[in-house]
Length: 442
Image (cartoon, rainbow, N blue to C red; front, top):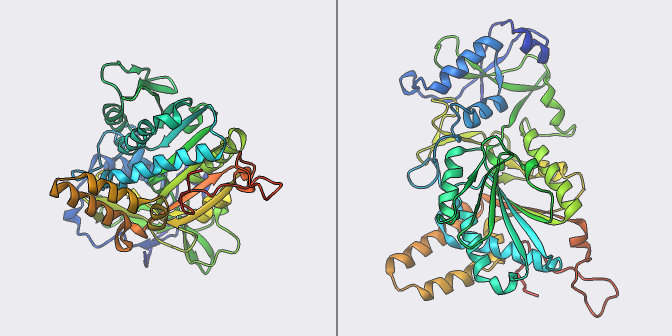
């Protein structure tokens, strides 16, 4: 974003003044160069302009939340945006190997911590259920290893449309789903392999027990607050109506400090930052759960380690899309700041990463798994699909270096208090954490 011009003073409503107690003298940011005729007036745009006229400019975080998860018009609520016909495609949709290796990761961690009698697999934002399905297939294939373990699946999903698709993907159609719209567990069923599965709208409703948590391309769609450094200090970026075009939105700078500024580090050296309080809340919840009941969390996403600045962008039809044009028709995303996630864990648990997807999958044995599948495949088209999927996942210019893996584990997992012992040492010796080092079955 670049500052273009100053905006005249504007009196805020009482509600807005409670947050920003001064006149609005923002600065105008460009949201792109799309002409007015390419900016259709969507139901979400009408909703947002009415909201802004009523209460004044809104934060980028509030804008994202409205556009993506508004119960009536939100992008995620009633549409299937994944796959070739959607607006973006994810790693599980590209190759079955991705999900299979994550299934191996969870089993490896389960074994490294003494093979507890039960565990929950909790996925945040499960998409179409493809990733969970690939993981469950691995659990079935390694049934002899898991035969004495009581497994249950718990999906955290706010989208009605996606939860329906997940149920079709994962559950046994012969066993009717139990549905209770007003309950924290709004849907229950049984997977095709006989494992109980439940749906929730909020992580806090998931039972607290020994669990493995999975968040793949989940944190990047959580609302972010954006800040620009100015001669007067940090100023938050807001979304406002363009005074020259009534059906067009624009970015403006707040005239003074706002509450979310508290999330910026005192020693921050960048001139533009994005902070995600919602991510911090979820990481704190995951950290408390893992510290209390054990398990681990595996996070895979676009991101950086506190180095990037303006990463807020939109995707529509697999192409970049102006974030302020036709809101409600495109996905909105911002890169995950893994340094912030690490900080929000508050040392309740240990963290590993971020490391590049290419490195993680290589450590997990993707090359070996690819060879096995190629050897089993007689169809040239299937072999080509496998090779193309591998290239998309591993090529540094594609997903290989754009995606990162990050893990949260109990401190004792890295201190060596597992059941594994080294005969030459009096203290337990921790087994390596797969993916972050080479996979080694023990």
